[in-house]
Length: 339
Image 1: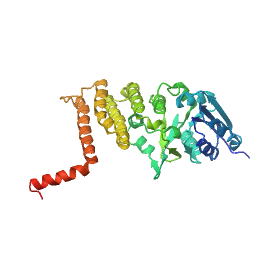
Image 2 (image 1 turned 180 degrees about the vertical axis):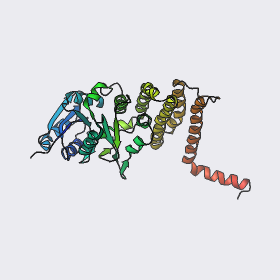
Image 3 (image 1 turned 90 degrees about the horizontal axis):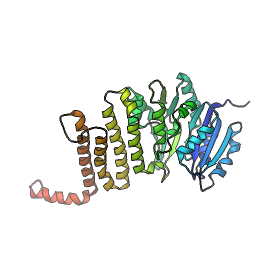
Image 4 (image 1 turned 90 degrees about the vertical axis):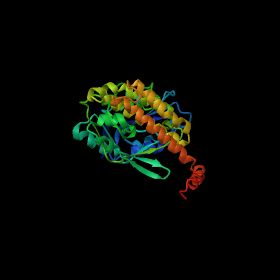
């Protein structure tokens, strides 16, 4: 007797993923509740991605399995092509270099049915060279009175965890193909902007995210540009929910630049790191705030952020040259009689 299937179309964009797509597809084939449909879109790969994907078809038995090839247009365009071709009520997203745990779909469909949500997501495991790290997305969902505001601030919904109503994705216009990064973050904010739209994030790590060198998360400058654009795009939706929307916008801008700072410091790009406060101050001006210290409380926010940032950067610089500074400090201490 065949197993029941979930009314889900699994969307898998792939670009030069011949080495990883078999793992991703096998994780779908091994689901305790299989999907009704799997759609792979090869986005102009120059390797054997299409051939490797098609070779997996026998793993899916009664699941409809479709492989589409198109010229390279980007991950957003590939996902949109798959959503257009999808025939099921729900769509779920998986990248070709990641994987699901076996009960991902079964648990997601249980949660969806519990309150007829438009979208559900969950925690995931970040696979690092030192081991797997549980990324607690549910905590961010639950940490404030308005989960949409928390989503706007921290972008805690990974695409590989999402199951959503197909009609909601289409009504939002799908993924914005003009954005070179953060297209999924933009789409979730778009779908969930209406306060009557219900969603949840539950605290089970049901997917594994693998970092790919040179992948989308490595394009820091592009990510800054796109995330700032998205912050302004959904500011009206935020303002409809909060009187203090401007301060939330500034907090989002700070988060964007802090994430970039962490990347630059981790990669040794200290010159770019020191430029972050200037760029943040410029973003604050565009947000309608005065970056200079005034008696207006809102106006002091960018100035305080700028000052703290400069102090932090100086401290980080000093820590890099501590081996040179320590001998000098020893001489100074002896000169003033402290030693």
